[in-house]
Length: 223
Image 1 (cartoon, one colour):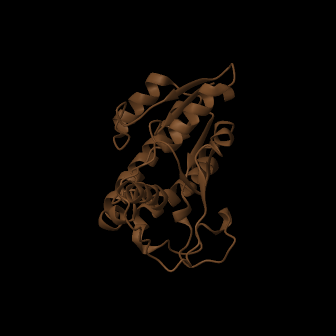
Image 2 (cartoon, rainbow, N blue to C red):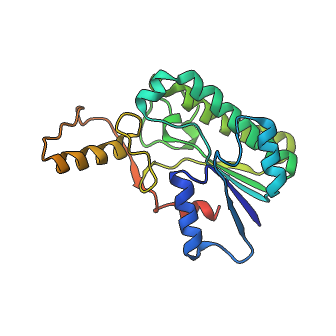
């Protein structure tokens, strides 16, 4: 097996690389971790060259344009267009090369804003996502649609996983541009360093589910 991991320099990509390096990989596997330095996945020609170069038999697709709440609110169109392009190029290159299986990583934000709990994968398309990051959310939802279409028309084994919110080493800890948990960790660090008071906004009523990133990469690497 030649397993290509897109988004290999990100939070989850680095976690999988660590798990593989610590012995979770199998003798018949060759793992290839790539990042934006290796190819511009918004470009179909670059993506095709990357796949032709490495000739993967399996793909774990993690690459995405990502950001925190405020960046999403400001650039919803960019998140939509760039991620649609990335996902389409990766899945179509995998199809053209005859990749045996693709596992893509979705996001909890794809679920409808107005929903009931607990949530599961059958509820993805039951309503619009939250308006704050609808561009990113719809682009991620479309992976599920594309997976089904490639399977129905070409028999491709393309699937996806929906992890909880993930945090840990190699995350984006930028307070203005990161996600809530790494941002809070950074704020707590600064408050402790400066012996300052820490204020956390919110009512405490919203539900959230998060996991440290080393809990589930072993599962993903074995898909």
